[in-house]
Length: 210
Picture 1 (tube, one colour):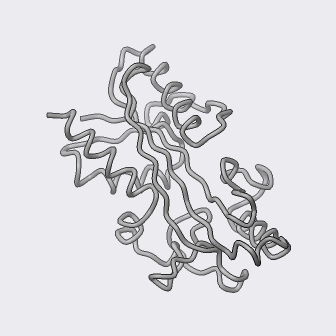
Picture 2 (cartoon, helix red, strand yellow):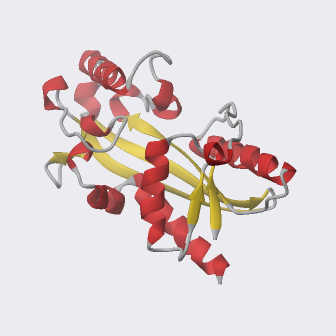
């Protein structure tokens, strides 16, 4: 079974491939880049689900033009910090501007949280959110949305770990005593927002494969 992932993010594709590998037998996960498709839809939605649907539908249209009707998975995700009123949120991937790298975005969040007078009220609670869509057509699709709860590390010195990507080094999981970036791929996929949503989508794929 060939399934398309409506993203150019190689980190996300790798994670999703691992998550789905045990749920949908013989699955081949392709991205638009794998087929040389020009894919860069503008994410103008007001929610993670809106943006996931925008990406899914854009790829659906591209594939339909080429005579392909394979199922599509799309997701949108981000970091929501309570004391920052949900920021970076929908703008997580480009927070602070397109010129910033992941380390600089992490530093920006830590700086904003440290200066925010509401931090003492809300603490440092935060979560990753992932909205994922299994898209067959505009009339037929499935949605799963999940979170990974944690808290932002106290300062830049507490940002740890070489695994994962994005904001993983600054989201601390108190029950584990580690940041997301300190988890193994297997541990992260069991607990993460994308892992939980992906397993739901994987089960739906398997059911529709029968």
